[in-house]
Amino acid sequence: MRLWRKQKRFADSIISELLGNANLTPSDRALALELFHGVLRNLSLLDFWIDCLRAAHIENNVRDILRLGLYQLFLLKTPEHAAVHESVVMAPQKQRPIINAVLRAATRQRSELLARANAQPLFVRTSHPQFLVERWQQHFGAEYAEELCKWNNRPALMYGRINRLKIDPETFLQLYPDARPLAGNPDFMEFDTLPAAALDSGHCYIQDPSTAIACQLLDPKPAEKILDACAAPGGKTSYLAQLMQNRGTIIACDRDPERLQLLANNVARLGAIIVQPLRNDWTRDHLPNEIASIAPFDRVLIDAPCTNTGVMRRRVDVRWRLRPEDFSRMPNEQFIITRAAFQLLKPGGVLLYSTCSLEREENERLVRRLLAELPGLRLEAQTDSLPFRDGFDGAFAAKLVRVA
Image 1 (cartoon, rainbow, N blue to C red):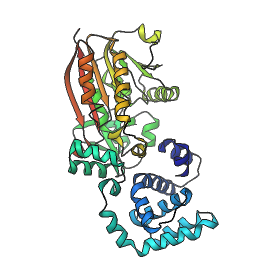
Image 2 (image 1 turned 135 degrees about the vertical axis):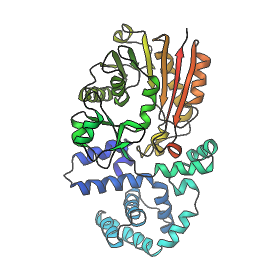
Image 3 (image 1 turned 30 degrees about the horizontal axis):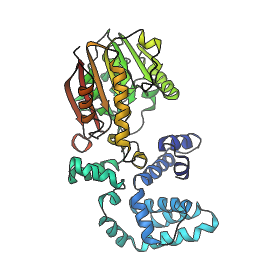
Image 4 (image 1 turned 180 degrees about the horizontal axis):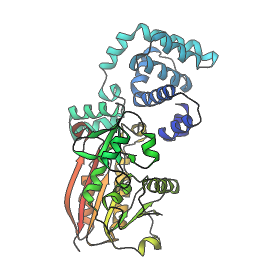
């Protein structure tokens, strides 16, 4: 928690690095993940309880330990003696009396604290920024906004897409019998634990079913030329290669060299041989010759950078990074990227714009702006995935055709 608070790094990056350097048993590893993610998902609620228990100022390092202790006591329902003891011993000697006193008081006042929490506004009870909850209440209504907040606080289920470039579903299930096929979506499986062998062999890729919407709506064909403008880490890219039966060309771009290398590693492991990774920043005027020489493209996928409000269940610290101004800043960047990539689309070609955002500014309103400002563009189809309605991550996709 201290590293996340001080270094301003993404939570997943921090915990992956720490666990990678630690020699933990699988059960201890799972507990560490649960505590880290659980505290981040419940920050406002935990801080509410801390403030109820102690009016005096609490320094941040002590607050971090109290958050861990209260999460175990009230939400994990860890036995009281274990939760208190483990929290106390992890603190420096001079801080132990405060931590012990606060957590002991919490155990005595459990019923009262739980009741007081239940009477708090939704943004406190579910630990979301107030401005975010209010915009969801306006957009979706109070009931669905609450469902969305609760969805974000549940541990994410694990899904994987079968990589048909290397294996068929029947053989996959024979090799990995713990996998459970998803009804109505034969390319995807649900797992209880990470299928390490299947991942290492390139037989599957960890991916939420909502990510397939954009690829299926784009509907790429074998032998076509496809531009995947914002491709890293490569889940959609490799799915496009599968849909194309590994025939044709996919130019897969990203502006970050580390993410581009991750993409290259992923598509290589999955056997997507038609993918050519290239670094490019669409917000700049320069276009690499490698891209210009291949254009025009039959289809363009723009899986745009976004606020990620549809995937908060998986990206647990996104809610604490967002600011109100992001909802005006991101659409401008999305428009610039889309306008640049649109110039490389052939007449009659398909442009697929997608996000993992739930926000109208980044989705429906952005599409309306594209139609108004990019001549010769026609909307053919539009769809979305809403967690509280569909049971998967949030996603949006719009299929547009260049008619001139």
